[in-house]
Length: 362
Image (cartoon, rainbow, N blue to C red):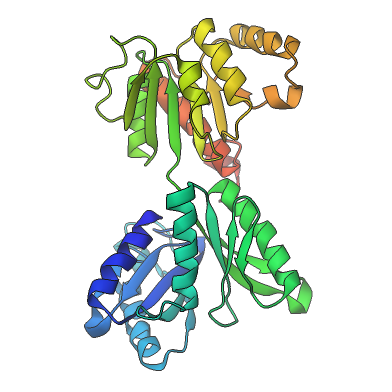
């Protein structure tokens, strides 16, 4: 969500105040997900979108003009009818909830700007996830939750802060924003948790044939990509034009120097014991969110057994996905790359990777 920070920088150059429109909840089929932003400035100037244009955004823009004039926030629930859905390229309709707030860009103490400033520092300077929590039936106050569990600000009540913190940490692990309920029964209150973090990174150990489509596909998914191999004739920029970094050297030493966070995906495709074992020893002591290793079931079990004899616990070894990927009948390098990334995405989202027709809730 770094684009939000960039949008704020640009808006400050031309606007004194804007209506900030945030997509806080979706039901059914919708073109964008929770956290999408649109900014409406003076004279109807627009940055971003909460759908992909059309009559829905037009209505939001109209409502934003009133919020700009009155400074009173609005929470709207908008149904995408069949015509709206077809106009947006969808085959069935859904419903979106959007929150519209006025933000005075020159007021450094504005709760939204202060929260985004704190979050930006965590993301860009400390390479950590952070989230903003805001009550949807309350004022502009925000609680900022950092991935280490620390908090900045308050929602006004200690119990709300504690429950909001737990929800925010759970959503951060999934890399998702969303609306949650705080409290129970008649006293429950809805809150929107907006998660921000550095881009997920794919670290590929081994620069062989499977690594090439793996990096290319990962780039399309918005992942930062890093390729590591000790063989200079394989680890070249010509072979990996889409990679953010290509490093030649000892994989275990290079991996040990990296900050492997929960948003890091590590995939070992070298299929070489002298790479796999030292790298796994390091990665298993990190917070990497996904660890996959190319190899047969028999070879993978042999490596896991070896690490178990060295003292690794069953819980730790269970983090290693081997054979790597979902069972889609992959045979070619591009198909294997697709299988690997499909599993990584499913694990990151906390999903089992089963067919959509199996009835798994979206």
